[in-house]
Length: 153
Image (cartoon, rainbow, N blue to C red; front, side, top):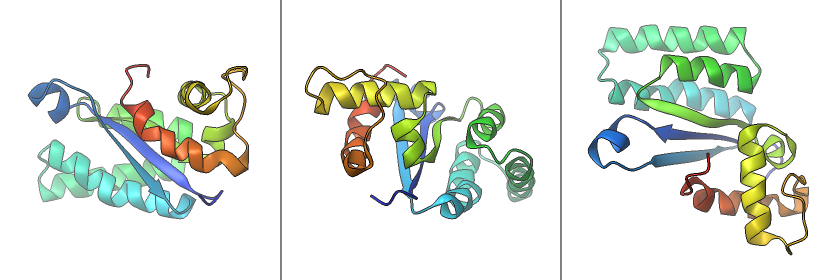
């Protein structure tokens, strides 16, 4: 996987929890930062709008608000907090950021993912916070689906 890749992973808090009483997560891998922000304003916003049963004019207002937040808060972690406030009860973004950040950062989600990764792919003596080497990022990506099925985040 390209070291410029980004991901948007989110929990469907609306339909999944109310209808089927289980956690429904989705993770979209994107080519780079630019495509990631386009995805937020496109497919992700449309998905949220569908869950919230928004009217076309409400969708446009939401798009303007998303765009403003992206401009005001370019840091993905801060942006995620504000977007989650807007989409509360519908979706919750678990991760929005680069693959390199997942492999190396010390936030809650990257740390939990890496602990799961080392448990699955490690030799048993790795510290769960150890960053994943770039050559092994493909395996980190592969374990994401299994990780998202866990209740640990």
